[in-house]
Image (cartoon, rainbow over all chains, first blue to last red; front, side, top):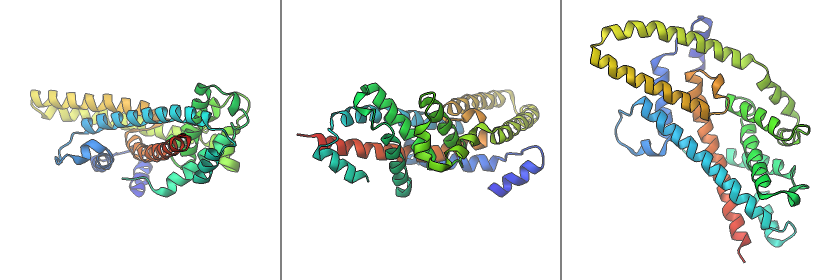
Length: 92
Length: 190
């Protein structure tokens, strides 16, 4: 794909082919948990985009929740305690 | 697709390195401050795994650079090590951005010229349906652009490519954070 792109950029105007976009959208579909399970091949681009945005937003929310949880958990663990040593050994 | 364990391991290592930067001040931090530190370290750590090869990772690093208090850029340096200066400058340099903008502009011109030809061929109802679909795609592409770090610098193709990589990286980040949270909860049970 990168060779295709470099040929396009030297031509001056980038002709982004439909095939490229279709290929990328299908890869995106495979990553999304909901759409992947559906049998239909005819998922529209706008639906894929919508599911992608929803998925990314849910991942962002999860990172935020986990950061919150961790900030509470790591506060209560005394850094010198046995539990902290266990966690440190799990991590390092 | 499960993110590769190598990605998760590298993220974990870099994230812990970043968190150590706060170890001296950790005792005096409020829960909110600690949460922000954890989140920022996590974001810079997952971005550093890409070593400046993707636009979103460079944007996250630049963001981490500016958010880590005005004067000491220790967080980013701690995680990225000697490479940090090169990677921070990579975002500041307009090389990548200007190429993307040029591509966007020429693509817009191409789209406009193609659009005029295409709608003339269809019957009115089909033209209406396809223009609604196009508008939806455009609107949702804009939303996606706002969700990906650095999205405003990307054309449509780059945006989707970056999205693919970003989702895999986000998943790795979530996996590791979730495991750590579960392990901590188990450890803190009386």
